[in-house]
Amino acid sequence: MKKLMMILVAVIVVNVAQAQEKVKKDTYIQNGDLIEATLYHDDGTISQQGFFTAKGVITGEWVSYNRNGEKLAVAQYDKGAKVGTWFFWSDDNTLKEVQYSNSKIASVNVWKNEGERVVSNK
Image (cartoon, rainbow, N blue to C red; front, side, top):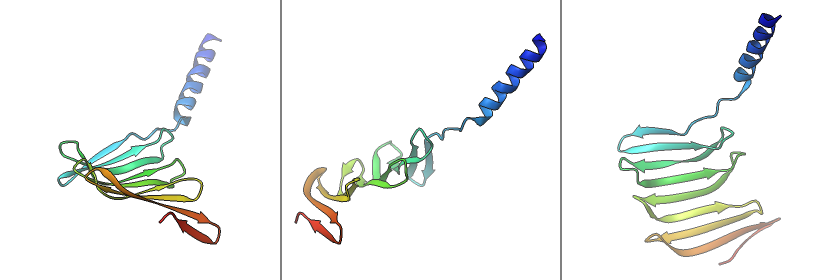
């Protein structure tokens, strides 16, 4: 009886271990002079994608996603400095367009989808 219980426990443990999803680990792949990073939410969906220099400085385009795979933000970096136009999406049909210059906000434009028309604050 004792051996039967031990076997039963072992079978249950193996089945539970196999049934658990493997959580994806963040990946970093050398791509020329850059390191391409893919970061994951704890449920295995992609959280962020972007690049680092060989010295670990953020650079290029970075994209952030929610757990449903929808874009939350698109950002631009030049060797650690915030540059260019960044976009931020929100649940209330709003898109924020932020222009950076010298790592500082130069301008902000908010686009709001109001049914059949799109409204801007400019």
